[in-house]
Amino acid sequence: MEQHRKSLIFYFVFLAIAVAGIMYGGQLINNYPNLRLWPWSNIALLLIGLPFVFLQKPVGLPAVWDDQIPVTKRIVQPVLIGLLFGLADWLLIEFILRQEAHNGLPPYTQPFPYSVFLYSSGAFEIEVFYRLVPVTIILLLFTKIKEGRYWLPAFWTIAILSSIREPLEQLPGGPTWFIVYAFLSGFAMNFLQVWYYRKAGFSASLFLRLGHYLIWHIFNGWLIENGWLF
Image (cartoon, rainbow, N blue to C red; front, top):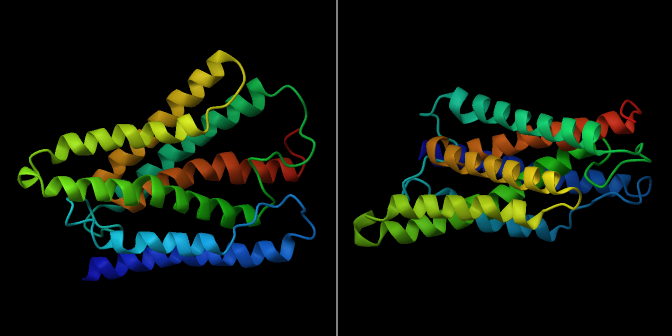
């Protein structure tokens, strides 16, 4: 019960961040016409994930916030890995691929500190609907088939499929080498997220993505907004 309580608190903290971001963005929209603002309906959608918080242990996964798993594996390692992926994207795209100076904030950034709210909420939304909901549903089904005999193959199948989804949906244009890099790095990061999800819980997968977003979306946008990255 204690793990359920802490897991719910974790989930509601990110719901609160999303709500705060919507309210904060509403105050900025007049000054930033191109501001990306979440609709309130997104909060209702995120509530869909709440029942799945209680299903992690029954399907053979750690709790969303599992105190029995060391902080290094649950938070520190995922964040550091995410930072490395974000740093690689930042160096490659901003210093090798990009040829022209920025004219204002590019579409993959937002004004700081609003960006902290938006991209924290965006990471949470992706992890709920790419990871928490589909992975839990699949594993729940396979715990009932042949007394869970096919649980492990089912896990690796959904791990691969869910890791392919985002890089395919966000496949960029540009040189062939960059398209290949974007797909392979996107797959690798997503696959590591699923691996950490299995070993350390949903929060670990989320923290890995947050590490990436911290560099690529938030820090990058802050540099561009302040004229420190031309």
